[in-house]
Image (cartoon, rainbow, N blue to C red; front, side, top):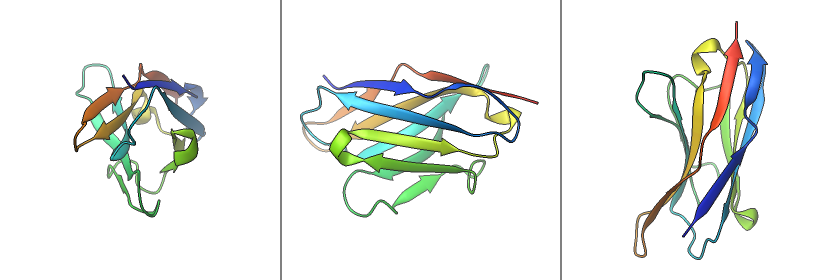
Length: 121
């Protein structure tokens, strides 16, 4: 069973930067997509950024709220996905989760334990 471990969260002032990492272990089959989600208190979990595993790493998608500030990237050899977060705002405060999803057989949908990001004003 795929296991994901996240790191890099923390407390940062508004305008600051953080880099999140998520590394998979016990992975036998490469994912289709690797994604970052976040969940703020009292809100639903939302998709922040997405990148496909195969092909050019330029195939990325972002939530409108983070476009131009966040960058998702991957290191396939290390089974790792990153989220570079710049110009952070208090509204970015949330628990951030990584997700590795394989849509074709043998499909799986693996989640990390979450890492807290807090942006102070």
